[in-house]
Image 1 (cartoon, helix red, strand yellow):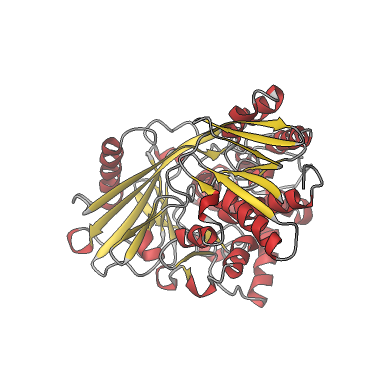
Image 2 (cartoon, rainbow, N blue to C red):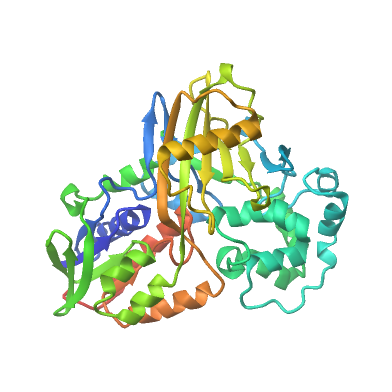
Length: 467
């Protein structure tokens, strides 16, 4: 029986362990799995807290359905009936610009573009900015670079106003990054491909939108599970033996041992195994492999990370000004605020107590991390001050909760794909070692699920070791 260690009990590691065990149950080679995680609870960044008959998310609050790997896992786990789509009654997103909320043009998103009239009438852009954006199809594609920073590319295609007020909050905000440093190829390669294939982002998105109208999407772009995303990790844990999960266990080193590997923990506990799947951040793995491959450790450490924080505030609706109908709003860097985005969570997913409104406020991005790493009292104070400016809320919340995510958001900087190729080549020099997770090929939940399951399949198919 092959022994495989999984480092990390987040969605990536749990998905990998699930795939390893499922393969054995389906007639593949039997596997003994042991999961190691330094946290006191499993789930990684997916952490749901029960609140009355509702829930609070400390980490992500939904997953993207247009990437199939999340829905596939939901189906595999028998959770399809628990899928919860975003509310159709409260659709819409705002941009906070110029001291007030302005509705994002309907239809503008990651894979769609609004109609001409909507663009012409939006008050987020000046008339000059609107006209410049409408000229995007006429801007020559030129030579599409192998890699280019998001900022220069989008300013060139859309104009400065549209890039900084619309595109950057939507796109760079997902990565908590600086658009002038993020690699477009590694974050949103579809925009490069649209430019290459259609000569224009706008023309390409219009063709995609027409195709979607013919084959209407079966569900909303974002979804969660009834009771919160931890239902996903809880269900995965239900398929993994309890004694296989070792929490509050810090792995300090992984090293070759005979024809396999040895996992060394801070408490001197060790485990000899055939293979190791790392599902921890690149910087964490760097410390574990430094003794056996200094060059690999340096390459792993070369992937930068940003710190963020998520703040949930619960208010009595009867004591505060009405919150606009919509899912929330984004805040461009140019506004000079600490808050980067606010989700009207109880609007986005229905089911909260009738008299309550739940707001999730996000802090921290590359270059603006000090507040996100500070204490809870300071964070809540600053958030409340800014919410007063933005929404006119001056009453104290009935509940506040802060979740810190220090060094948790990988930054796919210019040249990221080259870095990852170098890391993967270095890992390949160590038979039986596999890497997965948000550090490499995508930061979203579906990306992490795909990454974990793919690493598990590679480990199963790999002929190295005592199995």
